[in-house]
Length: 187
Image (tube, rainbow, N blue to C red; front, top):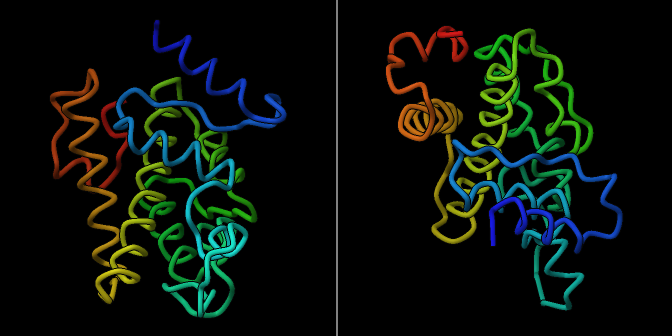
């Protein structure tokens, strides 16, 4: 079975295939692609999703900001921590301001990037990495009572996306010092 056949098989399981916005990125690890796919389907274990599954949750508030119930939409677009991260990532990528009112809005940010196919793929991947970082920091707060910092989040987005692009794509010669200024410098 080919990878394309597996992707088609997975997509067939969704209620309405035309609504799916997420596109798999080959330079992003499979676990992150799967996470984004599940987030778009609202099937990651946010507190609201756990409550829907009849799991007893004492406090349904967002662990990162505490201002609203934790849903996919809030965690990635409404949370103050996420909003600050999107502002920083948007400035770094030259896609500013990042206006996302829904998770699907995040999945379409690359459409506002000038440039060719690889510019769009890199920005799409950086969005996926940013969502992954938010989820990892959220889990750190929930399970280890850590206190996530914005500088840590930005550093993780830049370093993970740099390493994954450098070692999982045709851009093996990218340089860290140039990457940290502009992720599209090599195009």
